[in-house]
Length: 74
Image (cartoon, rainbow, N blue to C red):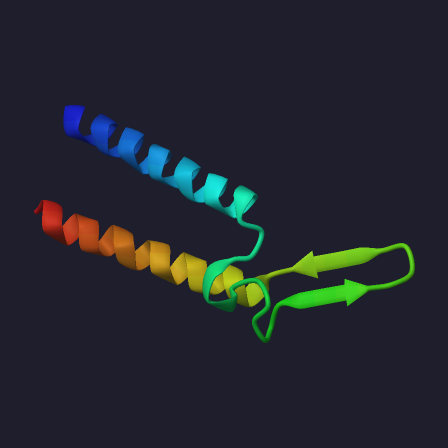
């Protein structure tokens, strides 16, 4: 149980660092956020943005990282 706690703390710090990078550097790397499939609607007084493709790619990458970490820890 102790190793799970340490892993969660390290993972949480990693996520916070990535979040801070996104806050301070407005552009996402590799064109993320402006991919085909991301929904962007701009009207006179209204802007709607839903990064569906970007969300899927980030989800796949995070899943692969977790799979890799689980195989390494065994």
